[in-house]
Image 1 (cartoon, helix red, strand yellow):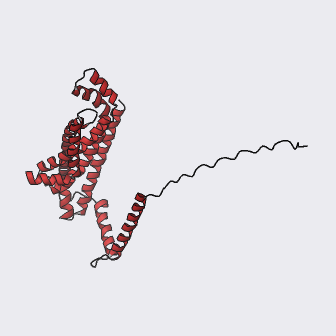
Image 2 (cartoon, helix red, strand yellow):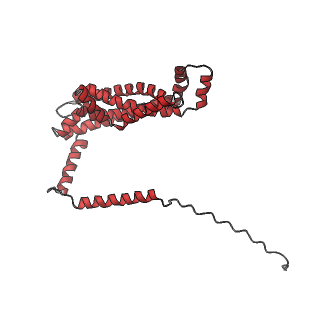
Image 3 (tube, rainbow, N blue to C red):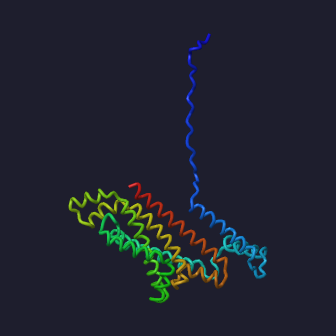
Length: 283
């Protein structure tokens, strides 16, 4: 028999957790949505009112398929031959390596002077502003500027690629240096260590892996730029050969062969970069 005086114990109710909105409405999100919808509408209107000038879409796609088939499924060295193309490829690779070395050396020096935790704040700010201006101008524009000053040729290409590489690597290296613990640098200053002793005894061993990564990233960028300026600045190399066979002789078989050579070099550079970075990380 249950006693009437006994209290019935009820389990406490779990409090409701507040609802979290993953996408809160904001003016910036609304503007992005409006711009996206506007671009979709403008694109749709443009495509529906595009003047095709008598071009038949089915014929154009069929010719595109034939061209891609010639380029990527039937590549050959064409009339230039493998030795000439390999020589041109080596020229572009050497151009990219040379400009990357120049950019790495001067970029590291400027990065040390531009780092906030190492040098005078005004000097660092001035260097960062100058390098930001240099980076704002694309590499191909620098190559064209120097081609006007020095004339068409490899000199303009070297100066153009090196100029932008220095600015790019200065920013990359300085950010790596500024990530070092400030107490390490201060403790060395207290012991009376000189500036360049601090740089090469404390800074360099800490950032060497990052230094290798950024340098090889820039090497890949310079290789792509070397191909572009090969024709634009008259620097020759594989870029000039690609321009001639694709835009002048329309030899798509040789164009595909050159593209495969460029892809192969890119993979080799990436493989070397990964191996060297792993070597320094595992030390």
